[in-house]
Length: 565
Image (cartoon, rainbow, N blue to C red):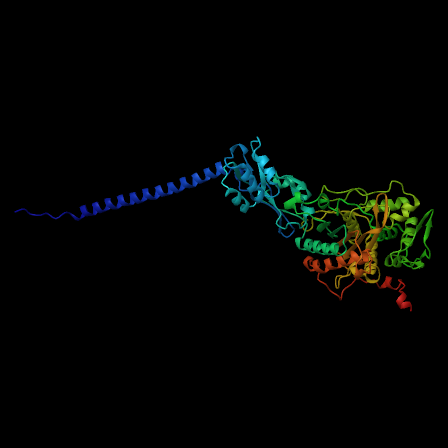
């Protein structure tokens, strides 16, 4: 009889451990294989992208995930220009296999910028390759691809996109198809935007897109209303020189530069020069106060009749036919009184004054698209007199704005800039007028808006000061009696100046509500009023009708015909 011997317990445990270890090894190997397979799949995908999507890969430099060109943003970080992926559609004529005549018809239907005959010539040409469309939308790519023609090629490439379309177009400029800046700040910042070490950090401009939108919309409404040839406007920080808004009309879309006429790409704020008329009078008065020529606001000048200078006669548009002091001369915009003050200043001091506020040469700003002022070649007696009220000398609207900033900010001239200035980093500038002269000019400019030609430029609670200027438009070596350049240069709030606002209308036409008038008081001043009312709170200026600059010592000097009766 055979006796069964029980298997020791430790043997069973050993077997179980071996099986457990084997199972664990199997699972570990399976996990490693899955991981390896996933890694190979990812690697294969990256290799495929590198081979077949090379155009897109070329956007990146040194293996970094940075676009070829950095972003441009406004002072608050709102994107104004950025680089995105786009498509290009090209054709290899030699590789076409389908009906070329039918292909030409289909391409003309999908991309109507060329006609069927042109597409057929391309399809039957001997060229190796040509582009049919750069910066194509995905929907168009899909439609062309659906034609099933292997001779048509597609590639991803970087596209410069301006998400705000026409907003601040003349400030931003644009790039060419190779991504190089050719105008505006795109051109100025080209090296900075393409520097691999800096592309990841957006470049902040001084522009505030909200204020820019307000300026552009109000200018456009006025341009349409008055059927003007063009318009320009800007907002300038009087203490830093930062340009918060800069608008020029007509405008263009930097996303579609080729579809705009040449004149739309011209920046009238920095490139075009104008005789800006009576807006020069406060500058002349400030220079006379500073030079000790206008020593008293009570002194009266003869404006009883037009001023005859040789064969030239200087008249007043708002003739008072009496003696007037300096406050009255500005309130009633007297050419005669201003001319008499300029004659006392003399040629040397007048020329020095205009140089000191930046009127000789081009405006001091980063843009390369800028014109140079028309400076008198010979300062005759009449030249000295007429330049005092903005005739015989032509400057850009930006130069005028900078001069007004100098008038009211305490007398310091600073260069203007389209780059955001960090707090406390504004240029030191140079002194042109004393604090006392600047304080007096703030009073005088406020009086022009309260009692003079600038009334329609006021905005409730914003304490606006400024001066209108209406000049006959220079045409063919002479002047047009039927066409004006109408400008209103303003500052707010006048008790503590922060911003200059300028609006200019080129050849506006009168309307029923302006009684046919085309002067700045009726055309440009209302634009400034509306811009200030909209943009003031955005800029931190809260309207307050209980505050104002004290003009009591001057108000009593201005004769009011209504009060006289």
